[in-house]
Image (cartoon, rainbow, N blue to C red):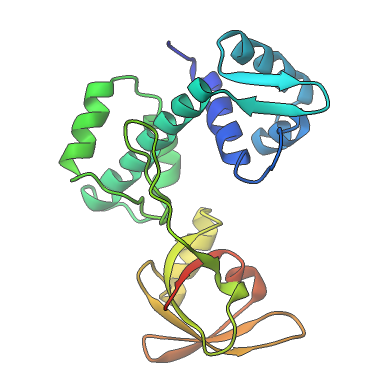
Amino acid sequence: MMFSQSEENYIKTIYHLEADFKKGISTNAIAKKLDTKASSVTDMIKKLSEKDVVTYKKYQGVTLTDFGKKTAANIVRKHRLWEVFLVDKLNFSWDEVHEVAEQLEHIKSPKLINELDAFLDYPKRDPHGDPIPDKEGNLQVIEKSLLSTLKENEIGVCVGVDDSSSEFLRFLDKQGVALGKQIKVKEKEPFDGSLVIEMDGKTLSVSNKIASNLYIQKSR
């Protein structure tokens, strides 16, 4: 089944929101995420419901059907594979790729995407540490925690970011924070949750806002 670019954007947005909502997603939450009117969301939900992508129940919200989940995972797969391609093969930095991948993810050719996956040697994660679904929609999930939840003297490796905005990624570049870096929490300030961390043999002060946007895989 073919979907318009607008429909695909809605499907992907609902897919991402489902990670934050235990139950159905409200039309207001979708409208806020897409910066659009709730009435526009309602119209689109009707269209997607007719295509068996979502189910909507009053007072219970929107959920993806099994078909909808697989469709969404395919869009996310394309987006993240293109991000890997842009960074690994065209030397884009990780803060530059999202907007370009937003355009490339709407290419329809399954053969192109499968060949791209093979060309990149079947990557499991994108440049921001997010898992890449396989062609069946399956994700390889790893155990991770926000840096802000680590205790003093705990150690882990940076495996992802919650905020993938260009501004935040450029800030991390300036601080030398990157995926694969080992981080140790030296001090934790009870007042504001700020941290003093050790990385590459150097100490660095990190605000709670930054620590709440960095994913760490704790060392055993």
